[in-house]
Image (cartoon, rainbow, N blue to C red; front, side, top):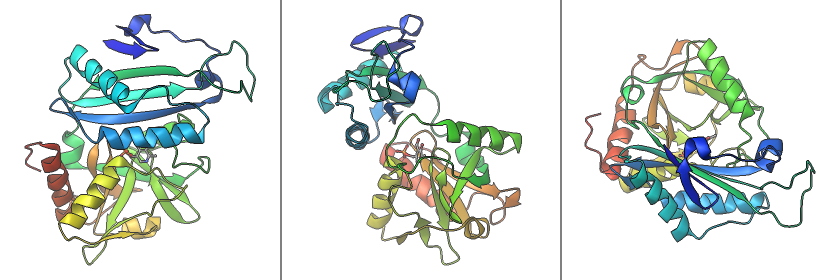
Length: 283
Ligand code: PLP
């Protein structure tokens, strides 16, 4: 596998960074994960503008122009012969040879990018996933996509222990989002509900794409928070993310959602999004 590190393309075995990197010491780093389908990027501009906002929020200068970022992404897809999967990018605050909380006046970033070939539309999109619920223990600026992912890593471990694939995180009695995806429910009237944007959740690029596709279709989207109880008794539940696109949630805390199978509205959302991706998949 060929990866990109600080200006060079190299085999992953040769990509090394310092233990004094602030990404390693303080999780002082931003990241993005962009989907690639049929060799094309899905809303790379959206990811790069969110990256800009995250970097600004954590005081790291954006090392590249959008054109340069796009070039690195395309190069990695080409060099790795990837048709479908994701490209992961990480920008850390860099290495200063010492562990100093505040760090220098201006940071010189470390940049790492790699391509991960795998199906975006697989068995889980067809059959659905199971979720557990747990407290949201993340920091309060979840709108920034940083590598402080310990809460989510532990949430996934807890989910796996319960025989589930994801976790819905709860704060003040409301679902914030899934461990690495935005959460949606379909109410008894077939209305689609997803939490409104704020510091409490990540503004998902897939979420934004789906909101605009649904509006174009004349389907109502209500942006408000919902409780885990509402989710369990909803007609349908699904999550959206670049890595798994639209994943039907068929059970929450061991209780089936609806009849325990992906529902019609979820299938329609999948079809709309797949179509926009240029994917010819019978959902
Ligand atoms: N929410 C969280 C916490 C995430 O980590 C992610 C993606 O990794 C998402 C939502 C979905 O965002 P996107 O659609 O931009 O991938």
